[in-house]
Length: 131
Image 1 (tube, one colour):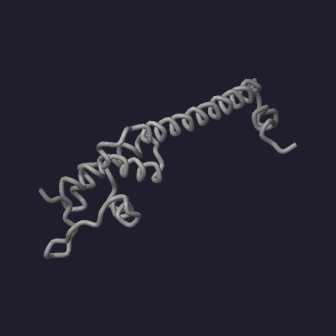
Image 2: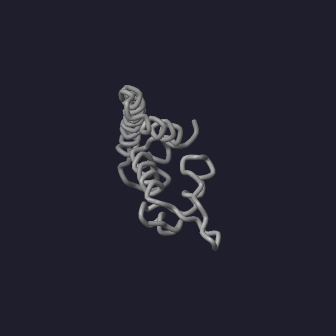
Image 3: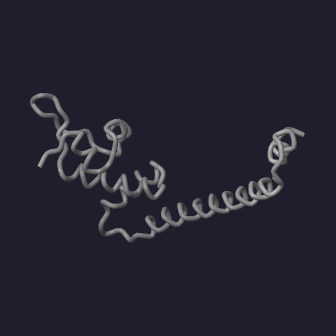
């Protein structure tokens, strides 16, 4: 079964511009063309783009996705390399969560300063103003 770029996009919830971008950077192979010069994608492209989308939805970078795609074709290799990529990504997520938690505490403390009143007396704006 062949897919047009629009049908491939709908099947994977991916914008056409993104599909073209993935082709330009080599994540997705350039498809065959029809007699009318339209892109014609097969099941392999659908599977590969679905993999890319899922990895991106999980927050993997394009470089990590490229590496995971390369590893996915090496069936007999042990999966330590995949584990290392996933663990590195998880550690980055944990760092971001810690940063967000600190940001939340700081903003919560600023909001706690507010006791109503007028803008002229606003403790939140005062806390944000340059010193």
